[in-house]
Image (tube, rainbow, N blue to C red; front, top):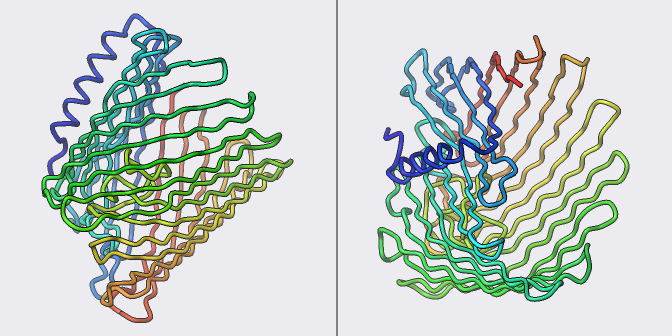
Length: 430
């Protein structure tokens, strides 16, 4: 496996130069080291070739951020992890993930330049289980100028123009170069209420020209700070004109609500968008930035997505309970990847003392691949318990066990059960 792409090497080099050049200014830097060993009785997550395996990983996390400088700001988090397998079911590998952002103020908060880099791993085939031989590296670099023009005390005009390049390790049809532009007018009614009207244009060129497209989006959104939370609502229209094939258009809607009432916290997010799947599914609806929590496989297509996430948290005196319900419906333009997902997550954090705690987790998800008869409907159940103990101010010990089962009423070969136990230790200096 190639560990670094040319963009990621350039990014690391630029990061080093910037950090060195700013050595005279304040730098917030921290790191965490961890060693973890996990044993599974079904490494391949299959019902016909169950193999025991022990995975040992050594991981280092690095965080950095700029100090009080107003002309140059940066922050980032990178993680390096070396993983080895005792039985050789998978190849030993070194993983490097993370993201960083650098912002230069060129002219008194009027004109600036930003640079962003991210590297993560995506599932190669979304219909297969998430095992180490079904992931590949993705590296994304985005850079360009921005203008903040303060028209009046209440009105601001913002323009951005970015060049973005994405590189996948194996799926070259998803590699792309893009020009993303946006123009937003923001009007503040008060200190707690504002409206934003925006126009976006994105041009994407892929290694396979048939995937090239132009995207237009117009939108209007309202943001309001509530007495005990926040609320935002946006509506607009997307149109994607492909170089080969018909235009794809659709409504853009995004709404978020967060509310805190005493010990209760409630969150709601609703999304309707037409976007490009290869960079992830973002709430902006324009496909103009990588997202770590969605679009988790290496494929390029135009996708219409509808989603909902509802969460409820109750904070006891020292413990907490989290319940989250989510729904996703994804329609792909060309690829036979249409799917619908439901998920329910329950987490209880039980603090035994000032040094020790227990996390109890239960998850259920249903995944329906609507256009793939050889995949069927997957029902997945996961239960886990983790014990954390602070040995000292810097060292924490973790013990855990989990049960993972996937059921499929249509295709027995897609069913599996997986039992795992793990032990780990982490070191976090002040």
